[in-house]
Image (tube, rainbow, N blue to C red; front, top):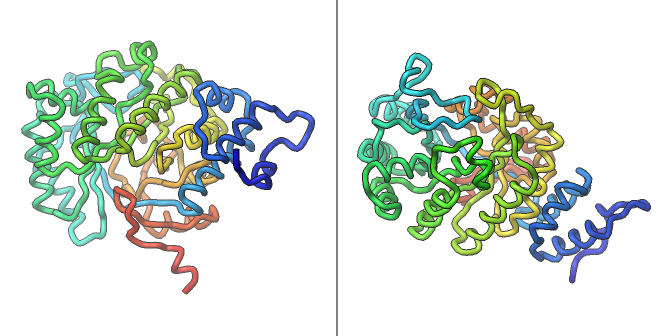
Length: 385
């Protein structure tokens, strides 16, 4: 194995407690060799936070240098009415709870797009509850109207859970449904709805929605049609480290086949206002550990994202030293999914200037990107002028 001995020694234990298993894992990672699920579990269970951070940062900088990406985006959340009853969800409401829910009309959603006329946003992110009346035809019309209003806007929309329900109700298969949506203007898929792939855990937290195989099939099909997507993992609830590794292993295997995932986004379980409020939230230390192991394990993913509205700006800053190279976007207070669950940031909006400063304060290079990680502007160049 070939690796930089100086870098290797910089984060291997400097005392009598050196663990040969961790040294072997570090040597493999620095030599760009893939670690096994068993080694991933060792990292979760036995590695110190400092060790994980140093190793994850080495991977991060090998892939992306000092760069931290962000984009200018806004969200459309068509509804929080949902036919599914996920125990961890604080966002959705059933049809009988309409007084606590919302259903946006087509015109209301298009008005949100019009609000950004002339502004340099590059992406609209469309996700929401699974409403029985918002069907495939409805959303195809929405996509076409958005494309007419803003042909330059990248439309990232609809979790695999939403798509699975839409396609099943319309009696089309996955490929047919995705082709229809792509033709209407859909460019890529977000990563939501993955939760944890282990079926025993899913049966306890989200039993009635699409299963892991169906989620993976939808993303694989999208990739084969030339559409990129993101991947997520909901962590910090009733799962254990083996479930996290199993989840990432399935993602890693699919990425080997298609190469279609843009980024991996660990999503922290928040316990406010849901049926799992008795489950305590994990610490910031656990958050950072999870980012680091994710970065190390998912060797074929180019990017790991920290969704700052969920974990807060301070933890997002810290995460950049634990493998994270993307902080999502400006958001413009256009999402309620995590604020309703008690996320750190209750009014999620950052200006471009604020995001740039947040990244710079961490000693990183701020790069505005589009959805597919093409560079729009290098803000570090302003420092040298």
